[in-house]
Image (cartoon, rainbow, N blue to C red; front, top):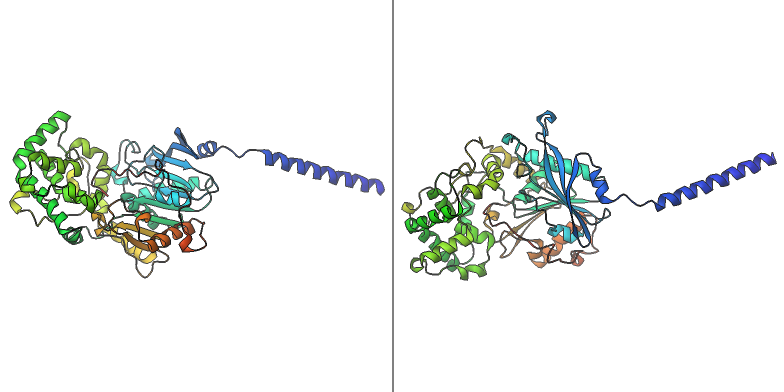
Length: 468
């Protein structure tokens, strides 16, 4: 019996020793490198890694189905980027709704939560476009499903809280994603997101332009816009020479004349989208007595005469396709310009998409999203700029919304941010973003961004194109 007990005791000690040694060995095993973990995800491949202090930054391809309802329809490679901080931090899912930047950058919520950031290139923006392109598979549900698959693939790696965000069309994208996959994200921060519920009813934009800024500034802008159409003949000759010099053509929009008018009619909108009231001093005060150079340069600086060329429009074909099939597009009036000077008016999206791509508008798409937000919004924050035309038709919250907010930054344009809100709203918005990310401050008043501002990483470079 004693011998059996001694043997059992020895065995117990041996097992304990082996267990302790095994645990020590396991503790010494380094965690798999983040690049290896990302590339272990089925369908993920590396394009390049770029260094940035304090982060790892990866440009990746992810294999997506062309049609999330039909796996046999083929696949395409969708670009994403990962700004990796630490798997112990929350993650922000960002999309601009357009191309993805392959330069390290950090969106405002990412700075606030000091987290990781995953950025997605919207489907059909090159190079994330199937070949051949079946344009019927470019819709808000398919794009939301792209995000859902990316989130599902990355969640085991980044298993803390997730917040989706985006500005303009990216804010719209974050909202649509939440509508179709409301269980994925822990919070949504949508910046300057237009909400064109009824495409044919655009009077809100006309009211906006009648009151925005100051009367003096509106008069300056309206004067230059009108004068550019009064002087159409000499300025179009200059436009023709400009196009020939740069190899620009006008097959998509239809003619140089249409492109010229479209650019001029974008002028006032473009000013308020990207400029501030203080910039009114840069606008000619006496348009009728301004030189042709002054009129041309002001229009070109703000609206850009290259945009409605075939070459300027081509990168935005996916946007205009969506605007003409689901998103809607504004139509505004020009009461300060006599009718004889306006030949075409605000052109609809059909004029900006090649004719071999069929388009049919779905009026129910935005009504569905608007109704869902009003009645079901949870942990959603919408931020608008007071002087931004795209905010004339914003998202609104109904009685069914919970812990959700719509704030407007005074005097701000299309670059409105939480940092530009009035103090109490800024504190509340920051606190909510931290709370949704699982990082609640002790009090709302103590809510501050957790990461210091980085002039290079946090620099905002808006595209000078008059799209949302």
